[in-house]
Image 1 (cartoon, rainbow, N blue to C red):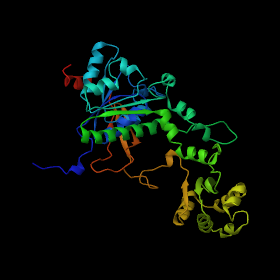
Image 2 (image 1 turned 135 degrees about the vertical axis):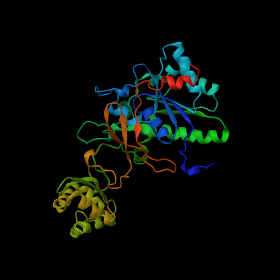
Image 3 (image 1 turned 90 degrees about the vertical axis):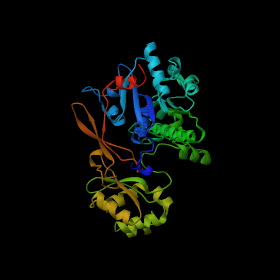
Image 4 (image 1 turned 90 degrees about the horizontal axis):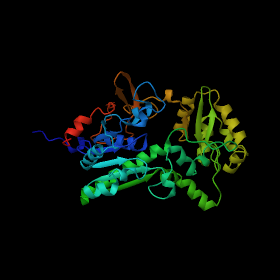
Length: 386
């Protein structure tokens, strides 16, 4: 018998994850665990995960669902019935990990709360995500990404100073919450390997959003000044996250230090800028930022974005081409050649989505199939004697 090299075995192979998830936070966390080798069983209501249909009417595999549910098995259970609750309980007790982002209190009323399940199955790792915590007055509020962006202070920092606050252009808190949850689950599984016992991983969108602003919080407390919206620029350095137009688009540039600014000027053939009294010191560059941007823009206006970035990269200056999603290609500008995988669904052309953003022994980014609603119900329940 050939013994397989342990480094080539997916790290979560043989583990079962039962997901009671909708939308993004929990399904995305479960997707990561699935990509790492776990068998993920997605429990859906008879109506299905709402993400199947958000902004989509063509079939039951909308963009949000397609992004975070490849390779899972779908089981439909009616938790409004006693039979459905008993089936869910048996399934949860067969799992290594249970994940849920149901409104606080509902899983407890259905007999599927963390305390009961961990008492019945001490080895169980139970992960839950809420909007505003599991207890207290705020816990009853609907908890979606945008509310956490607003309540955490994130929106107050995002956008231009003379305009209303702006949300981050994607569901950033949901995505971060998924990563936090999966990290907590993996840490709990490591501890279980030592102690034999699982544990609870409790995540809220509001805590994730507030903690993401750690640098801004530190700046606020040390300086006593409230951080304000300033668009792309950074108020204490120039050029820093400034956008400059080129011959064919735009780039973003940061040259924080005197050395970097001198290298920037030399790279674009404008060494005299480093000697200009207005720009010689950082304080002057900040004070004269509009004039600095005009001069830099004129110097780069005849160059393509890629050419400018190549010049600056060679000089050790941070810069990036501002690309649309249509411009982002696997294998270019550092993007892994195998990052995108094909996701298939019945009667639909395959779509390509980013997979795990890390390389790991035993884990290969691979295409995945989306489960039809309830496709694996009988298959899974038969193993539980239902």
